[in-house]
Length: 181
Image (cartoon, rainbow, N blue to C red; front, side, top):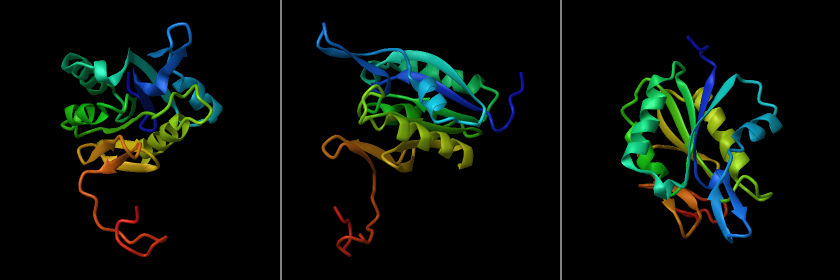
C-alpha cells in the first residue's frame, strides 16, 4: 500500500514516555503508550499511523530489538518516521538507523512519564512530529526544545537534557559570554 508523502509513522518502543507508576510495587514499568492520546489532545491534523513495536525500558533493549526497529522502519512505505524511545540508549538506536538514508527519522522520548502533569513528553513528541515534516532525510533526536543529528548528541544526566557532542562556543544573551551555562 502506497502511503501519502505527508503521512507520519509513529513507532513506539517504550521508555519513560510510556512509564506508569505501580504503587503496590513502588516502581515504574512501561505501560500502554499514550502517544495516540497526546496526538489527539493536540488535535493533530496531519495523517499519522501508530505502530506499537515494543514496551521496553531502553536499558533493556538488545541488539536484536534494534534490528527489529530498523527492519520495521525500513519496511514502511512512508519516508517520515517518529520513534518514541527511552532516553538512556536513544543514541545507540539512532546509530543503528543511520544508514537508512532515504527516510527522515526523528527519535524522541521524555525525562518524566507522559502520565505526569509536569512531563516533557507532549512537548518533545510535538517537536519530533514537526521536525519529521520539515527535515531532510537523516536520523535526528528531538529533545529539550532542540533537534540534534542522531550521531552528534549525548544525554547529560547531571543537567537532565541532551547536549551536542562538540558544542560550538556561542554568545549567551544573559551573560554576553561564550557558553552561557
